[in-house]
Length: 367
Image (cartoon, rainbow, N blue to C red; front, side, top):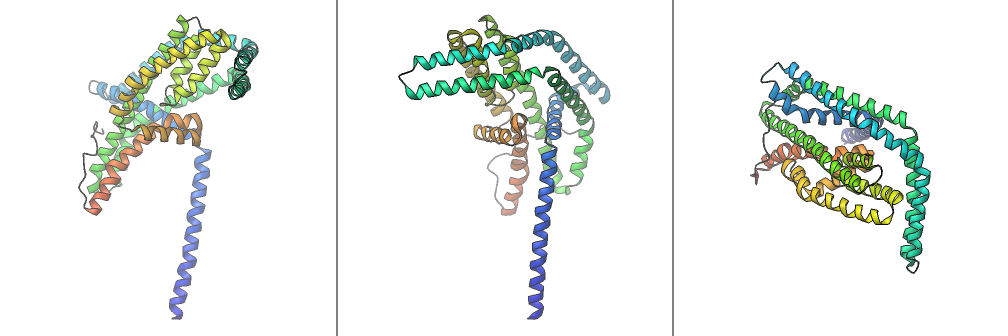
């Protein structure tokens, strides 16, 4: 009896110590991850960039050595990026400079426009309060944007530095991914390797499709928006088009962020009439995008549901900000592959349940 009590007490103490060690380890891991979020975001962005280029590299590697294919592909990308930068940097810089100089006047004009709307709806107390709130919020937002733009050289240096890091990480991932995949497969039992190989292939296919189409989507929507603003004579059309194109990389939510930015700039610079026209144009562009391009990206290519896209984007944005919102959907696609092709089949086998449908496509083979 005494031995049983001692054994019970020993197990209890050991259990508490084990639990404390687990919680301490989790806290340390959380602290390390929280301090390395920027590095993880850059790494995942580099992996996405590499995934977008991998099909082209694989095709070229059939005609030349793999290293030469990698060099040629990234050299071509660097040349195209340098050409685009040469064409766009000067006019973009000029627009940013004009915007910074005129920003105090635009803040005042925006405030006046919203106060005019407030007086126009003076008989509606709720609408009047909403207009006053919009006036104060918009003024504060413009001031905050101005502070960021005033730090132009530091901002440009940060963007260029991160772009270089992403470029180098993408090259490193392309060169090391095959060896890494073989190592990962080697740690699994022989019976599970084929399932994991299919899952890794499917992840590569989905990430590649996402990166390629999201770039195309951003270019199409950005060019359409910028061209429309330029035809309407809106100032800073090029800058606004670039902002819309970049934010379009955040699925479904990007338009919610870029829309108010565009409309507030148009209201401050061109008045209510042109803002209403731009609202209609922006709405048409987004409707076409959401009903033609987005279903191809997220339904056919990524096989993600609308609910999962919204949930992952909002969660990523809340946890990691803009970078998290940008990377949330491809991360959700990877997790979905693991759940559907690895975890769910294992549970079915354990419970002897037949699958309802095929788990997914195999994708391209691992080299």
